[in-house]
Length: 171
Image 1 (tube, helix red, strand yellow):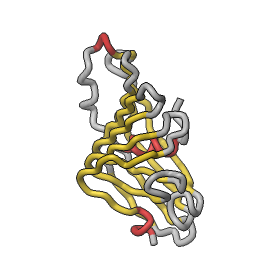
Image 2 (spheres, rainbow, N blue to C red):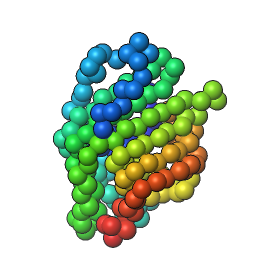
Image 3 (cartoon, helix red, strand yellow):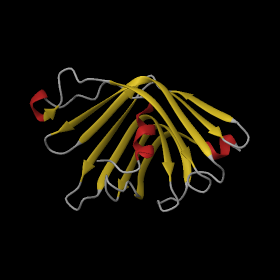
Image 4 (tube, helix red, strand yellow):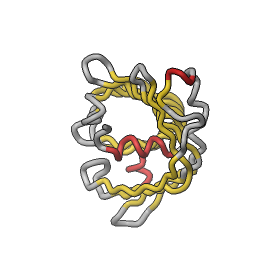
């Protein structure tokens, strides 16, 4: 369902469990939702993220997905440790996440509004607006995506809180 899973798994790195504000009848989910263990490895090649190869490892924590009848999708998790590594120099940047929530709201034209809160690591590719890069956010990130199949970022609509340019941190 989701394209470029590297983009939406990283934002799940740490998700607060305060996600289920919708009534139980509107969700396609068991009560309580089943959580899946989070264990993730990804490499962003030079030019697709940073100007050098970067590996991302996510360990620990749990991830839960909830799809509401109106089409909104929530992904929630907590307790993941993210480690970004410059493959050439072995320099690392580690984030011990406390929680995050990813919400995807599909629009009638097929595009999607993505809203991330909490700890969110996001890989921007060269075809995205604002261009290639990797940013670790703590706070809120709102994006417009071409679709959930392509996950191409059409615009960064809002950010709030702190952000770290992971490429700079690993240089």
